[in-house]
Length: 304
Image 1: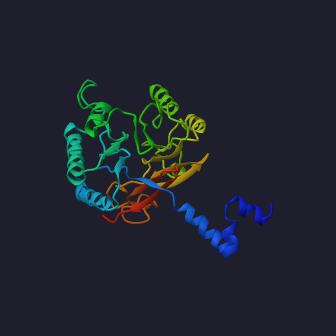
Image 2: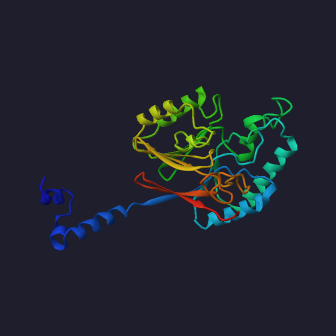
Image 3: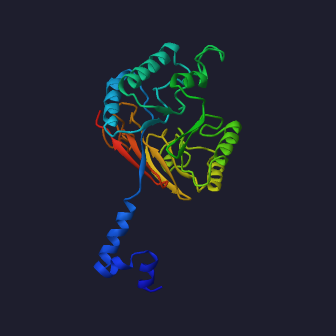
């Protein structure tokens, strides 16, 4: 095809004649910048709040910094508390951690927070399964969730929050699979979707860490391919490492960890103070656009 025909198809012929190819490129860039940003989200994950290492004060400072980005709401990717899941963890220790979480979040920010369950959030060592603090239901209550998995809509975007903590950790149970399939089917074609999970649904950084990603990734990839006109991005944490994978035009972001090396200084593999391997502690700011495009930027924080 001749250059004249290409320019004519693009509606840029007159610009090319008047000012040459540089003006054509400028106009293309201008058109790209006309995208309408409709939502800004703060994605925090793996806060692992604890009383040690001055973590509460440092977390509050992080939240104050995030507020300056003027997000519309927060997505919290799980492992909100340091750990409740080990056999030696007492009830008092679990209560202490959740008390710090509530004080830090309720006193510091007045934004909506949509959370998912992290593997370290549940107390499995309760005296009995009937105990009010046993397992997932207690965490759902503490985080104010509508359920262990759920969805919601904002400004034309659809948000899905998953529960990764099932058999073969990093997986969806049968009930959740059925719900997810129906949730996606009910959406109008082209509805942009963001999915949040604790475990990465698909990631590269899991090869550097033993934490693992979803073991049912093949099922998820196949399902997402059926809805590739809708699903735009999937965000996660769990690994404390930062990466981006693109598969079938869907972006998968593993957005590090606010706690970095669990608020500690690090170990021999840490590239810097409080780093988890080469990833500094931080959070992500995600901009969502009306046309379904996504910009995910990781912000290391300096409260070390």
